[in-house]
Length: 424
Image (cartoon, rainbow, N blue to C red; front, side, top):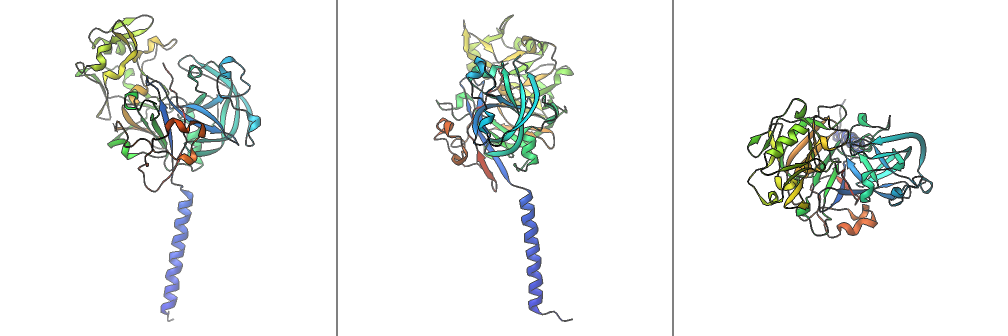
């Protein structure tokens, strides 16, 4: 059978058509989407705040992005305490997409704060990403320390297995299942108060689904998670200056927690650390004090963690809480679990924002690992915002800070917001 040139052309065109359709199907299955949530910091580097929206029409709330917990909750109108009355509360009767769940829940946090209420379902929007039918807690009781700072609730970024609300998917799990982010990762860049403008509006960003190469220097060192519930990793070595601090077998692991402000050591390690600082002092009620002059001194050296064979440091100037000065002494931002009521027996290390703000950190949910890279201290031109997707009431907080996000071929969403980290 003789095939003409036109027949061959038709066959090739048909092949190209099928390939094109197959490509479109794959593209439809994988939506290249990254959400950027700009943050606002404070002068003590104890809180970075970000916003989210719940319901239809949207009701806006400020929440903690907390990798140390796995649940989402906000106050509801059923909470009538003085604490709740100072916060924004979710009104389910004003949302057309609200669904009642009714199961009770309660959470006790490490700083002794407590919240409880009933579960509900609604659409939420964070970092420009819409999550449908997200289960969350409506708090009718809130004795949390977050309330004292005007922060409404907490958005947990931990694993599902760490949820205290039962069989509930976390927001990040639903982002992945609903194909709303390009990669199952969250990356974090926190700006220090000393690097921010007077308004403290350029506080950093959480990136859902990607990384921003302009915010770190290659390579990213990945460390496998050692817990099935928490973002916990092994520590190879620990130094203050050139002096190595001995790590016990139980103190050689650390939880990397965006919901905590400082660094917590077991008691023996906190003592060894501060004894390496000349003239440091201990107070039974307030904890460790260090000379305020340490903030401008390089004589002792940095606090350095060796992770995956690479060094990641915290300058000792960052541990001096200058606004706590008394007789030329300042409180230390590194403390012992012993100072936290009911947690004196803790044997591991907690790496809060004091550590995180000095690195670029990537939480990888699929491979269950945490990545660390050298942080670029000041982002060129400020943080990129997508004004179309921002919450209008906080737009002025970051007005004038614009930069294009440096990741090609992705669709970006940004929601302005507030973020608070637990102050332990």
